[in-house]
Length: 253
Picture (cartoon, rainbow, N blue to C red):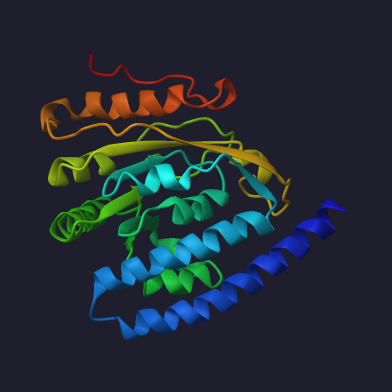
């Protein structure tokens, strides 16, 4: 029965995604000369489709974190990454005017990937460090020049066991370039509903905690590792024990 239930949920989700993608892809095509407009249009797509897909998968959100995120405005939103559900949580929660960052392979995801290709959001090649750094620099300029925010999963890939992994430095370099505050967002329980490398769904509750913004205007390049550790520590402390990192680097005092 679990297999049948999961297949029905996937079918409903793909149908919903296909219909929404057709509508929004037309809009993005008409807005091709205006990248920022495409990003904001796809934010509307995320608010509509992200929440709908969560419902289709049987994901019940504890509380209402969206107003808390929306009230913060432009910021660098960093969240732990344990499940494919995180994509839909992210696009639902990201405030209007937030640029997403995804691996370049996202374009192969059915329907969603094709819209992402024309959305204006950033794709990076994780295997090519130089290319990824340059892409993040371009995004920092886009964010700074247009009053945008950014949503990023700083671990770089999904955690197989739900525990927080070490952070990559990309988000911190964007903070240095933009001066935007960093907002950690803790996601609890998503890895139990849709596990990595599995197509079986286990409907249940997910708790999302939007933490207070961390100012970055005083951050310096020579102490960047300590600032990154501080963000990781704040996010780690907001997670339940079974999702906390086994070792967190020492943060700046």
